Amino acid sequence: MAAATPLKQPVKVGLLMRRRLRELKRTPRELAAAVQVSETYIADLLAGRRRPPAPGRTDVYDRMTKFLRLHRNDLPTCARAERESLGSRRRRLHPTVRRALLDLCEPVKARALARRLANARGAALELLIASRLLEVAQGFVRRQLDDEVGIRVAATREGCNYLDIRMRLLDFLDASPDVLTLEIYEDFVRPRVAAWDLDLDTQAMRIVLRSQEPAPRQKRALAI
Image (tube, rainbow, N blue to C red; front, side, top):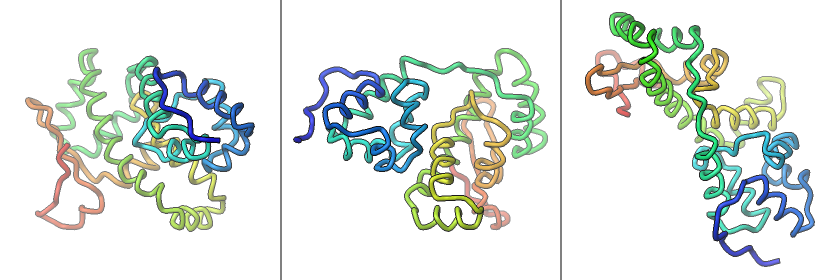
């Protein structure tokens, strides 16, 4: 069967997936195997129980597109539209997560930021800080997702299987500040971010990566 023509209007990702599976007479289990995700992951996307992952942070759309013989832009376009319609809950960080993030900041600046974040007007600043730190960590993990050999080695070391590790990476890549937990922070953010600083006037943020930490007095920073 030839590839489908580009969609004229975006539809929900789950609807597009269901429709294409029927047309191709393929099963969700076969799709899960092709995309290298769990059957539950596919079932949740099909049913709309899972928010579509963000295009650019994941490899699932490339794999789905190939299996479902879709136009290369269909799934990313539908995902962006659906995610935009869902919006964000903008929930405040849990206090333990906020403290953990501030622990990576210089103590005097951290105290000043803590005072700002404590009031209702601090929500936007808190979102900014958490979003930028997540983006940096997710950039590392997105590259790790392409290293199948490395994932398999990690799975062997941790006594689990390849799919377990891959699903953990995919879940983190779709994490946003409103779902950031201390466990996510400890597993993914802290191992990659050594320190950060924020200009309170311009809100320009400097992030020092942990791989750069050993170079004293010449720490290179990633400007975001």
